[in-house]
Image 1 (spheres, rainbow, N blue to C red):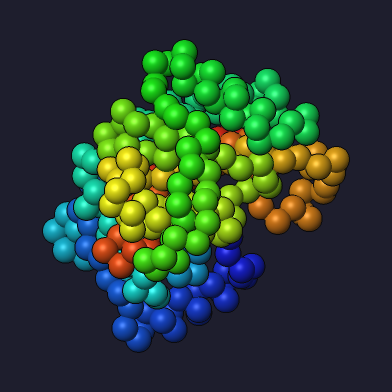
Image 2: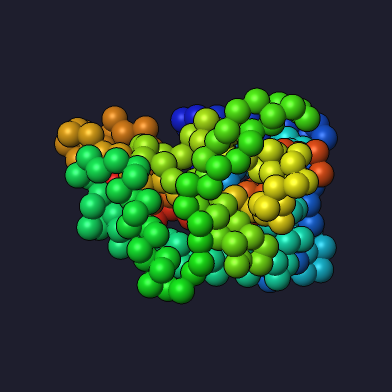
Length: 252
């Protein structure tokens, strides 16, 4: 998670200001501390959260400046077994995506070439899919045009769609496209895709000539060969992150 640059004293003072007001607090069993710490470091800006150890017997307190972050953090601990099952699919997709990148990544291949390779790997792993599935895209209750889903995994439980991108990283426009697909499926009860609940973004790094030549101090963020994010829609029809993977670190 990208954070503003803070000197240690500035970070301490910033956190102290919001912690002394009304922070949003989530209580987590101390046995889950390492899992909680890993989530916070990967999902939230470091100046937006704080950990207090053993605030009660076998209990840590996790403080957040923003309510949205607190709710998101809490969700990670309420998804239970369903998240574990979904991560198995992410693990399979992650391994095959890394293999694909190591063969054709950085060679200016178009998205279509990556999709052909993904289809081949899914077939080898006996994962059924449909490619380039047409879908009516909706504005509220009105269909406005056709879209095309890269992959529909019809035998997954629940059925899942995949969108493939070639970019420096996953960005909000990619997430908005996936959200549009999930909302449109939900708003069209006659669609054969109506049982779809989840969507996955897979991004293959699009490298430019300076990727490996830039000085470390000038890099904005770490570069990964493959990034993946899995979403569903919450009760307010907003994207809810279920799992996230960044694989094949290129720069530190």
